[in-house]
Length: 312
Image (cartoon, rainbow, N blue to C red):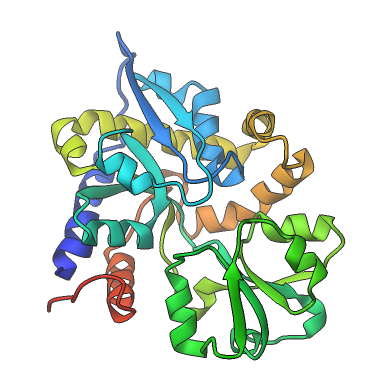
């Protein structure tokens, strides 16, 4: 696959779409029913979509959006590519790999400007660098996680016992030499509330920084219904503005849908993730992407053997 297909074409369609999203539209006479498939359960990482729903932003754009919760390894790309759902949430690395397998999908909005995942360890170990994590112990990762290949290449896994991570922090709490994949606004908070002292080495700090919270759709949808897609982007951006300003209303909705997460955790997570979502952009540019970031990621994935060759 060429980088033009893996990255440039994907990004440029999104760029053109986003550039056309500033105009305000009149009140709709009818609502288009659609759905947004999440790749995990309702948590603050999806706060902007629930805020858009709660504030009426979708309806104001002529959309009746059903937000569908996901779960572990939800096949979002396959569902969107097959037309089972019109829009979905994924990450840029997963999207490029899906496109490499033939899924004609495009990115239209990137909620997180900085990759929010990392490796969580016990602070009592006194580790100073990511490299030190891989000098022994156990590593829990979600099966198929792309960045595991990066960690293996750069640090080696020979001294580690690698086990599946199923979003249960009990092993981390009971094994002082346990390291695990984490979402910065989720597992570390839960671990602290359980009495642990987690330390997180962020993957973005070692150069792996794909967009995530990425809204995707089929290229066919974008080409056939560009205004519908623009409307969704406008509503999503408005929702994230509202959530960043006041997360409490959407947090209440999500907590009712996901009572296993404490209300206090929702509030703390919203604060932690805010700089990762806002990045260096202003409110008008929330969700935008750069060509350089897509190109870098495509080259990284090619170098790890996760997508086909990158042509000059």
